[in-house]
Length: 202
Length: 245
Image 1 (cartoon, each protein chain N blue to C red):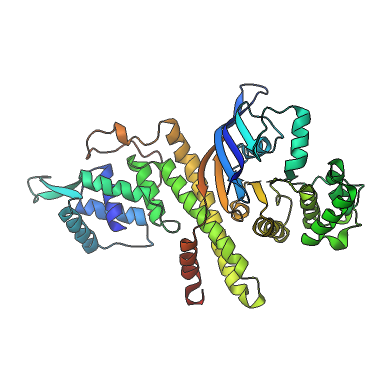
Image 2 (image 1 turned 180 degrees about the vertical axis):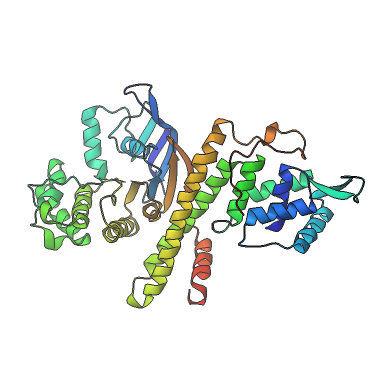
């Protein structure tokens, strides 16, 4: 998921390596620290794959040039593809949180569509778990039944959480005509001002 | 498999105080014969209004409703009442049993109002009570029953005329979890074993999950649909249960 998160950060504005590392730390929180080496390895791979491009920039005369990365059209495609796919399971601070945060902040993903896709996936899980639970009715299977019950309750919370996202962002997005992607011109403009109060924590 | 219910472009606008408010907007859907479908959404999303239009209880301002091959949205009140008696069974959140009739009389009543012979209605009521586990309670008054028992009586009553479709509006809303699950399992059995077509309204995803297909409503529109896939189910079981699954 590091790759996708980096693409998402660069969809907001061009950044150099260290800023990307700081950005990732903020996104993932303390739960899954990413080391600098991993970030630079990922950047190198993504540049080789043509998803991002680096340009040397002089920051001041005393210091060496630094490479600032921006998203290529292929990188944006890759990011959109990721936005369009539901993730397997929702946990706070997991891929889904990162995805929604970035979609919301950059305006590159349609929050309403992401929430809908995720809810459809969660409901399907709920249907499947409900059927599974019915298989464990005996006394010997009480632990399995409770395990499934726990998963159902987690899903219920996930669904309620999706509703909060929807109330906060998605419906308002609908009124404005969904994502502002089409209205954007270049690929590497800064996106300041498109972050209405989302806390990044971390 | 044909469709039991077909609705196209259904719209219903409430004109109360203030501005007219669309409760249901341009909804189209089909329910196949023998299908168990849940209409899910937050309160005020229009799901009960939609259910009522499908059952001929409310009329759309625009659009068509076909049930069992018959278009019902333009029927006169008298014809609509006859249509409902023959084709629609309804279960509500608060049971709506007649308090001074015993269990068997409550179940038989809609049958006796219909055209069926008294003897046939008696047989059918006994059959339903046996299927729904009510045989022991035949002579009891509704006031003496638990919530779960009352809802089972209401389900038997809804089924007495062998309806084409069973409609349920928050059928577990007034029940505790155990009794609620009992009612939902009953719906699944009726759907699986008797091929009963069921459309159920609920705000609760845990309840909706008992249905074979979930339609999600929001602001008067259908926004998405969910049905389980066998392949995913195996994966989910394996992931959750490890080697024991």
